[in-house]
Length: 164
Image (tube, rainbow, N blue to C red; front, top):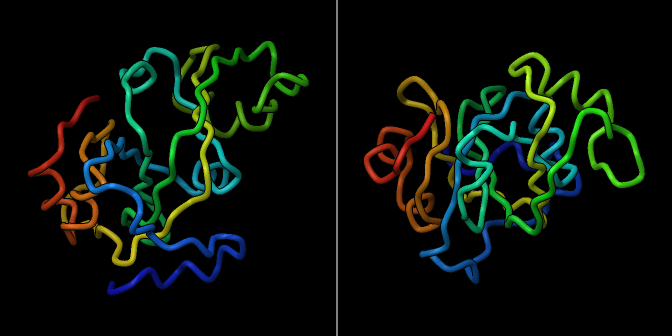
């Protein structure tokens, strides 16, 4: 899949991978189903508090989309991290509402606390990193330069540290 062909379907996502993002910037890549990627487009990604990525430091988050592309297509700068509780869903101080919890957390975890990563604009990779193996499981840690240098998940897996 040359180029990021699905970019035009996301209206406000007109930002291409910015050359001013340093190649050495740290990245955490995560798998996102359709519902989760929709929230990433809205500027946030929730992570159960017990997941190792909740505490790990990195500057950007990249998104392996399970459908429709089965590829890493976008990444975004992490602007803020906040702890939220299910009991606060929909409150003035919470980013997540009860629908977010039902769609994004409850099918996968019994946890009632999440770290919400809030992003800058999504940046589209000029050439997505395509799935040529079994996809992304857990979190993969690498650099922006790694994302730009590879064309497939197997290439990225050789450069990335992987955690559950």
